[in-house]
Image (cartoon, rainbow, N blue to C red; front, top):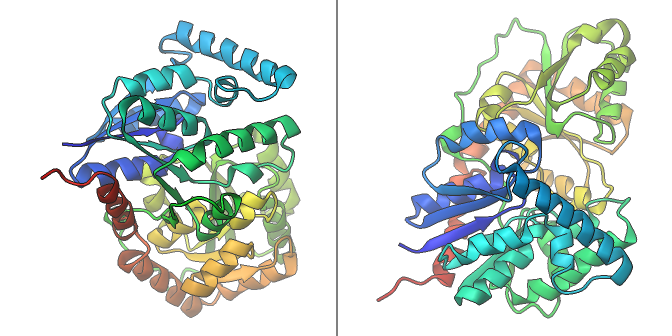
Length: 410
């Protein structure tokens, strides 16, 4: 059985894509090991729940505040030192790598000891690890551009931008395979590396049809329109300001909004205050476990993808929101980022509106107050996920890529 090692500097519960890939590769007959690192406190409990049900191997690298704290503290100190060194000396070999990933050395050691035949990186901190591990073991390596790393943040300091470019330009040309989470991210990566001899394929971030909940038939007498938005964090600069402004102007007691994700009471209070005397219609659900998200979303009518077009990564990505809500049988309201507009033109998943345009958003919300229009869109999306936009279909590309890289022995 061939061994594939997936590597991330984050945690499984905040990276559903690495979990889906590990599941698909295990189902295809590969031995899978996931190496991951502590990132944020709240995800640790979610990791425990998620990892208790997987059929692949996993290992936490670099400690955590609760597990191997001495290693965790040491790697944090080294990380800060390396970031300071890059400010003084610029990007140097084995300095930039450690300034990008807190656990670079520990991940590389674990990868080297894994006897992997293929290493796949899932974020920028893992890029150098997979390439260097593959060199040490005469193995193959690949990288998943879940995001367009060069433009994830408009406020990115020049030294951070320089480090990202340095690492990508050093390691991407050494990869055996590259794939991306949206067609436009794939195009951007290919444009950055015109001499790259391998294709940059697209692997959409769909979810398993096996996780699709039963379709919810809405009571015709139910006049409430239930809107749903989720992210890891409920906060500013995520398009919510436009949404709240639209709800406030509509002032419709039959329109309810549920927001899922980590939030502060102060921010929640500011949103409720903005809608005045219909503040009881704004609900906060907290963090929903990844494996429960589709079922939770199915209790609502309309999923919201309120992405902005800045930074560039947001303009060209396709987020989990769209694919989760399609799977759940929600109608979709989506902002017209370049990628979301293209996606909607192809698949007709819902109503779109110009970014930050309250009038157009009100029109989109009002469209779904028509019960027949809402039902037709929900049914279309539900069937689209069952038929085509699901992980079972999309992961075929991943398995084909793996078979090319790791051909069966005679």
